[in-house]
Image (cartoon, rainbow, N blue to C red):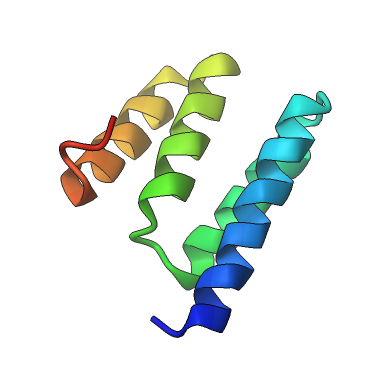
Length: 77
């Protein structure tokens, strides 16, 4: 993956994290989903979105997303 593309999606992940920390889970979710539209196998976006879904009570979706993230990087802590 080109460095510029990686930097772009890392920036979107950071913006999502910042939005979540600022109390805006809807914005965070939109940013994580933008990453996944372009790179559907992005561990970080899958995992963070899964955590967000768990926090907002969407447990089935959370489990699915976190399982997908772990299938990509099974030993990531």
